[in-house]
Image 1 (cartoon, helix red, strand yellow):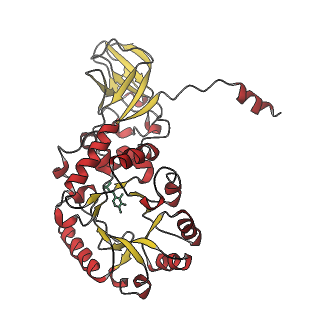
Image 2 (cartoon, rainbow, N blue to C red; image 1 turned 90 degrees about the vertical axis):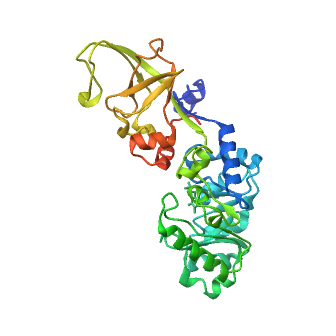
Image 3 (tube, rainbow, N blue to C red; image 1 turned 135 degrees about the horizontal axis):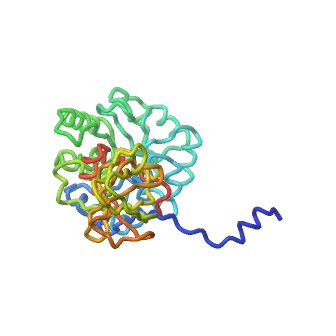
Length: 356
Ligand SMILES: *Cc1c(COP(=O)(O)O)cnc(C)c1O
C-alpha cells in the first residue's frame, strides 16, 4: 500500500478550524416570513445563489422549504445540482439559464427549471425539448435578460413561460429608474403569455404593491441585510462569525501591534490575538475598526488585520484566555457603514475555513 495513504488512514479525525459561522435558524425563518408578509398578495421565494450568500445553502434551503418557501433561485447549474436531493427539482430555478446544449440537457433530465435570458438560450431550450421555463426580460439594467425589442420574436412565442421576470438596478435607492423599469415590465407582461410575474429583490419589496407581481425574489434580507429603510424593524441578524483566541499578551506604554505598527499602547494593555484574518474574509478594511464581543463586553480591533489573525483589546473582558471564543460585531447595516463594504460582500466574502 502507498505509505502516504496508510499514514492518512492512521490519523485521528483532524481538529476543527477555530472559526465558525453561527446561523440563527429562527431568525432566518422569521425573516422569510416577514418578507413573505411584506410581499402582500405575492409569495416570497428565496435567492440562495453563492451558497446562500455564504451561509450554506444545504442548511438554508430545507429550513425555508419547511417554512413554506416553494422556489429557490441559484446562478449556476452546478449550484442547483448540489441542492437537488433537498427539494423537488421544479422548485430550483437557475437564473443564468442554459449556456450550451449540455446545460439544456441537464435541465431536461433533472427537471430543474431554467430562466431563459436571450434568443440563443430560447433556441437551446426548444432544441433540447422545451417545456416549462422562466423568462428574464431586461428593462434597463443591461445585465442579463432578453431585450424588450426581442419579445416579439417567434422563438419567444414558442416558450411555455411560468414566471416572467425582470430585475431592478436601483431598488435600494429613490431612483426614477425604478418606475421606468416597472412600466417596461408591465409592458412585457402585456406582450407575452405567462403564468406569474416577478420583479422585486429584497429592496424591491419595500417599493410597494406595484412592484410585487405574483412572486418576489429576496436574497440579502433573508440573511439579515437591510438594503432599504422600509425593511428596518422587520429583519433580524442571522449570521455571526466567531473565532478563538490563539494568544493573550500584556503590552506596556509605547508597545505597538501588528504589521506596520499602526497601533501604539498608551499604557499597560491586555490584548488578545484572534484566529481570524483577511484570508477568512475579515478584510484589511477592518484594521483599527469594528469590534468583537464576548459575553456583554466589546473588544475593539487593534492595528492591522493579518492574513490569519486579528488583535483585539481585552480590557472589557480580562478573564478571557487562550482557546476562548469571541464573536465578531457583524450586524450587516452597521458593519457596512463602518467598513465601507456592501452588506452583500460582508456575507459572501466569509471564507471556507468557517465551520457553517
Ligand atoms: C440575487 C438576485 C436577487 C436577490 O437580490 P437581493 O438584493 O439579495 O434581495 C433577486 N433577483 C435576481 C435576478 C438576483 O440575481
